[in-house]
Length: 355
Image (cartoon, rainbow, N blue to C red; front, side, top):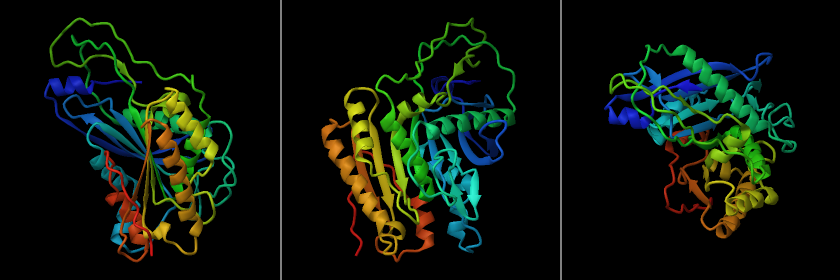
């Protein structure tokens, strides 16, 4: 928890809002041998020198490492801090962005072992793991990274405030998997399908009114910046983006019918808010004749989601976006899609078939 001003307070006081950016080496726990590199772009008040409670957290799982390409586009968009800045510009000023790299690399290959204990030495899937390893790992990493950010920010002393707050909704969560990072997303989707209908959701916070000192002072509240339990993380997910995901073996997209049906059933039962799945792809992955399973799995997932979307009463939605359809597949488009991929409003996207 961190004591911060709310967006409503900052806006009503005409206080400037900005971004605070940082890159940290984060341990999952004190005895962990490996570190995750996490780049952040967080909502920040220049006037108060304080973090601001976001409306949502966008969590991006990165893929394999690419070095020495001599391609300026690839080099720029393979840097986690640059990715954080790109996503911050897409989602807007009220969304926190977290770019997570795997803690283990076998050469260039990202291995999300803490998220999916069953992955092999190259980070490819054997089978999705039971339990909730991905959601528990995500919650711990966000908490530890937020503490690093708080320690790095110099804050001035703040006086008690006359402003009171009756309730505050926890931030929503947007999950994004890029390339190999799609494996972590698949595990999170699996866990979302395993979540019980009565899994607790973080309640809104209620605070008593404080004596006033001056109208620009900041309310002293513990505002929840991030999900604090695996249940609250999974319950807060409203969007899941697959961004040009792919593997050198099967498992790029989840195709378990039972998982998708469980998510849809839970949405229908009112056990969660609505969820949008968006599949973003390029010819690099969806038109690869040597890895035809990527497109096949994407098509299977889309059909599963489309079928359940029709039964969900609008609570589950699925979209496709295909980029660079007129270009020959290459490495640059695989990274360039990070900058080009578009957010979905209410417009159904159509997929242009590869020739």
